Length: 157
Image (cartoon, rainbow, N blue to C red; front, side):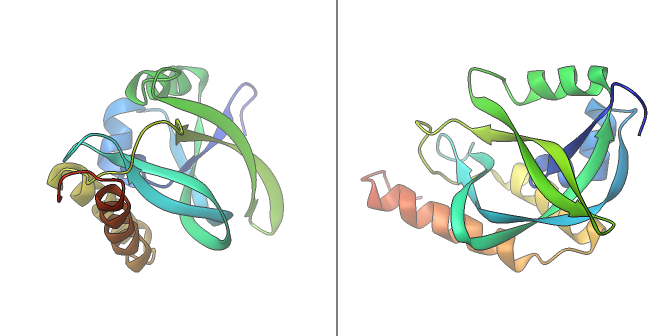
């Protein structure tokens, strides 16, 4: 890895190669892995929710690992509305049999669960399919997020 670059874990919109190329043209895929101890959800306003993760000791999420430059990270900060909407954390994952540290964006806790728009969801689905990852996890996250939103007294999604 080039000096100054970081590893970035994509689990949502930026699993889609086209979306990542548009925002971070110098980023390069370095592999896939699993983020253990987290589950995938959608959080945000009705039909505008975005993918996020939250701790769940029994869950595992497939992730796409990118090598990003400082300029790519700045672009991701803008896209993710950091720090207003989300925070950045460093997590450990396995890559090529080794434990590595990688950057991950997580939507802030106070943002309620919700339903993503069709464009956002389909962009993520395309990314999962392009990486050969299990799309059932994505579908489960959608259904869980809708159920959570409705149980919190939100209008039916």
